[in-house]
Length: 343
Ligand code: G3I
Image 1 (cartoon, protein in one colour):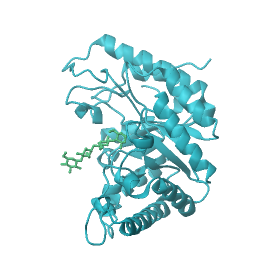
Image 2 (image 1 turned 120 degrees about the horizontal axis):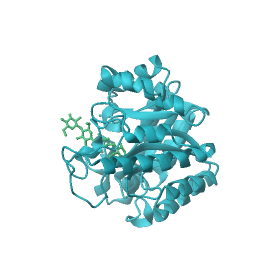
Image 3 (image 1 turned 120 degrees about the vertical axis):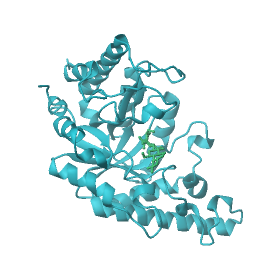
């Protein structure tokens, strides 16, 4: 019998996993019950799933995950109130069905902006009101920074139509609807990169100075066995802690390949690769433990290698980024994480 992952971290932070509703029954659910005490929906709480049309909310799939978490005393993260993908087109169309981004008339642009912010306000309040007693941590906005776009702000429809007002509206509405106890996050990937990190820092600081209620930064932490250095991940957390914010690792997984590598291990992953993965997971968790005061939660993007977005991205190939293999057996990385020291 193997130890429980989350119990090994009881003195540090909750350990979570992203799941789909179908994983709340069968063998996968047993693995989850034993090893994690936090859950996040991999897809079913995204805007397109939960709010596919202006007058339509679909709660069934999201509710399955909430229900499973409650039955098993697990906490929850919400992912995500606002994103530029997996969001219904209807948000960004005017009353005549014309895409708001195509509008050139200044008065109409202003009216569109107002309409979009009203829709967003309603979206956020409706969802937060429903789940505020069940869900503790909320990704309010996801991936709003893009260093290659003007001002470092992702040129999404949200940004093109409202500037940064959508971010402000979303956080304020979430706080008003959810009260002071829920934790509100700005979530992004690549936060270890100094350029991107500083753009995020400047945005968050500007928002905080305006009184926008941001509590924490979610660091997705989709890393590989080669990159980035653990020190850069921690340095980023320290930077946001300077602003009085908490940090969470929100989507942790560790690809076996370098970013620009397109090779495929196929059926047999070399042992030295799995052992390298274990060493790096150990190094990461030792650093996370040592910095537990600025870390709220650590959530994996999946639980076992049979189900991971990376097996289709950037190309279809064998991937094994998690702590359990495709047969749900503990990998070397599992033991490395459980045995990680804090001294
Ligand atoms: O639900 C449809 C199904 O009806 C259809 O038959 C099938 C055919 O392609 O697609 C299904 O939707 C897929 C969906 O996952 C649910 O499985 C989408 O194609 C697929 O693109 C989508 O991928 C998700 C991706 O976000 C979308 O951008 C991944 O599962 C999910 O792991 C991934 O998660 C993101 C986080 O939200 C944000 N951070 C990065 C992370 C990894 O990309």
